Length: 107
Image (cartoon, rainbow, N blue to C red; front, side):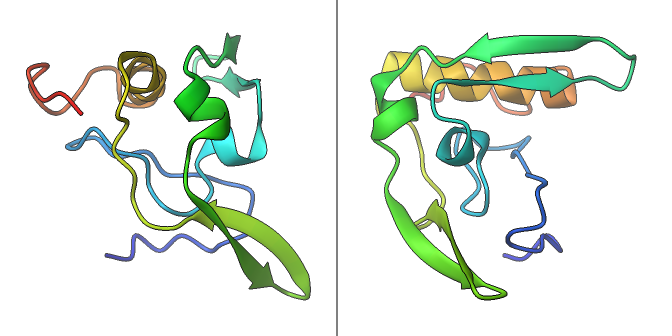
């Protein structure tokens, strides 16, 4: 499924309807321990990833782009730990304002 994302463009996409990371440029792949997210209303938040799975456990593979090698996920990834799911859901809520799926969907 292509959402018009250009690998290596510096942006990211986070799903609304599913508890999983999108394969191209999920923030934990490029922002190891945490990230600062700026919001449309002008405020910004620093978020430190809680899950070891988020920091080191996402399955990665190199993707050559314009002569550079960046990393992406091997495919969309559903968190397998409670902390990993917490990290993903924090970003989904920050991006979309809420989750687009019921909370009973566990990894």
